[in-house]
Image 1 (cartoon, rainbow, N blue to C red):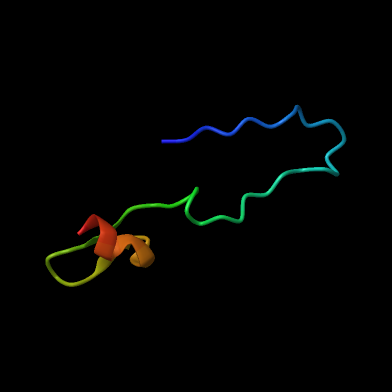
Image 2: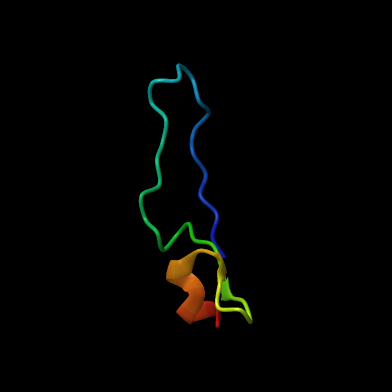
Length: 47
């Protein structure tokens, strides 16, 4: 797990974005009928 701390938002013009998919990801599961629940890119990892 990881935690990232940013400074307080002040004017709404300097927001932060996380573009690294290795930091923000969601599980993906293959159902018995072959459909995918969640993130298809993670199915192989969570299978």
